[in-house]
Amino acid sequence: MLAMMRSEWMKIRRSIVWLLVPISPLLALPAGLLGTSATDGAPWQEALALLAVLHAMLFLPLLTCVFAAMVCRYEHLNGGWKQLLALPVSRTSVYAAKLAVILLLLALVQLLFLLALLMVGILGGFAPPIPWGALLSSVLGGWIACLPLAALQLFASTLFQSFAAPVAAGVVFTMPNMLIANSAQYGPYYPWVQPMLAMIPREHMAFGAFGITSGTLLAVIGVSFAAFFLVGWTYFSRKAV
Amino acid sequence: MNSPWMIETKQLTKMLGGKPVVDRVDMLIQKGEIYGFLGPNGAGKTTTIRMLLGLARPSSGHIRLLGKDIRRERLDILRKVGSLVEYPSYYGHLSGYENLEAVRRLLDIPKSRIDEVLAIVRLTKDAKRPVKGYSLGMKQRLGIATALLGSPELLILDEPTNGLDPAGILEIRELIKSLPRSQGVTILISSHLLSEVDQMATRVGIISSGRMIFQDSIARLRKQAKSGIRMRVSEPEQAMRLLHGHGFQAAVESELLAFDDLPDAQIGAMVARLSEHGHLIYRIEESAASLERIFLDMTGTEGSL
Ligand SMILES: Nc1ncnc2c1ncn2[C@@H]1O[C@H](COP(=O)(O)OP(=O)(O)OP(=O)(O)O)[C@@H](O)[C@H]1O
Ligand SMILES: [Mg+2]
Image 1 (cartoon, rainbow over the protein chains, first blue to last red):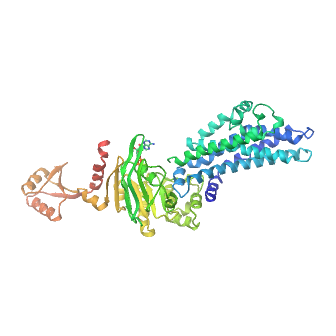
Image 2: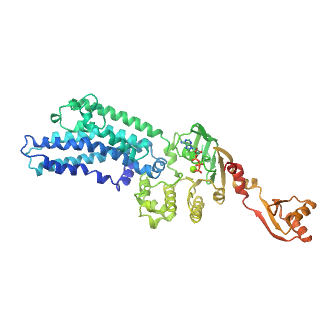
Image 3: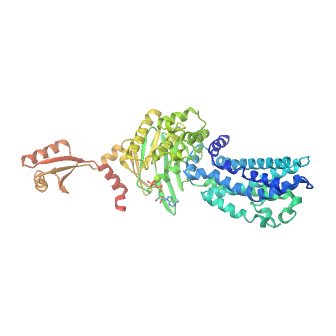
């Protein structure tokens, strides 16, 4: 598995994902500086709520789709799968490594987002203390909420054997996020909206699917991740290449 | 305990779209052999090879590589197998060296091996360039280098000269011929041209419409090939009647006298008779296409065109 990761690193090292990783944090920085003020009641929470909307509603799900498609793209392009799977590697470790790369990239995105948020606060002169608990649970929660989507999109990317198709599907399913977040009934089960539900602080969004408790949301995320991973992994293990 | 066979399939079958694309194939390949796996387009070569490598599952039948069952000991087997399936695989955005490095990391072998295989396929100079800028022949050579990287005991090459120009074909052929001697490798090489493997294979298997219709040494195949003699003479019709009068079997085909293969002495006698009677003999030739002919006859591809 470690060898597998090192081989994946070789392939991703020189690809355009590195241009995609900092996009959302870079946009969050000016948006945060312009849209918040140190004189707000709780400026840190205000800034987190403001920036997390765009980031978690749009960028996180879209980036998850693109990263999933990306780690399969260079295998689709020129017969990579047949070469890779004819090597002494188990299909499980190949699949797990691909998923791990997606999750690592997303972790990096979240880390940069946290950094952007801290810079907004520091440059904006927000009053200390920094509410680490709220910030970290938002960033970490957003990352965890990407797990089911990452597993689902990785399955789609191996299934469609193309870069464009799974990304297009991801875009189509991400678009209605705002609407679906309004639905207390379906929202929590919709993988593209889960990052948003997990990231935006509850106090600021007390409507629709945000009414769900974090415990329930976490359970839904855990179960759907297990389900999507199992389906995707089973498919990949038996796939003829 | 050790099976003498590097590859052994029993009644290997693959159904695709309701039809048997590979049909009860028994393939046997011995250690150290260069085995030519022949068949026209769509015969089932690639499908067979993908099953050998565990890339696709057989519908029925068994596969043993290096004496082990591919279903049970796939990783153990693949550690000792190098392969190139259908067309070379590569990561275009990486250099040749990086492509090999990405594979090396999965094989757990020293870095120096990369330089060795690059030298074998003569890509050392271009190793630092992105592969998307390589010519087809270079990509093919990189594919072979990748296959050689793990110092395999068994090399499975599916049409490694696909799309190459004559010089490229010759080069790859020389490369492949040099391998078993220098590294003790067993090689399975597929092709749709008999002439291509003729000069390097020790044994051939011929597959047609999924069935293995011939599997034996090249020499055996040659024996089956009815080679003939052609003779261009001044008056073919008269010459034929003359020879018939002397008890020889002869026919006229497109202005040429045609005979089945004959011993030298008989040909000498015929030439003497013909000259005695004033016939001029312009040239005598062996019909060399005969090996290709029997391949075509066997696989029946001519009829299907
Ligand atoms: N998914 C599929 N469904 C139905 N038929 C298929 C499928 N894949 C391949 N075939 C058929 O299987 C047959 C064998 O294909 P295969 O690629 O093994 O031939 P081949 O001997 O490698 O030919 P070539 O010399 O052209 O490479 C072909 O007739 C092809 O049409
Ligand atoms: Mg083929």
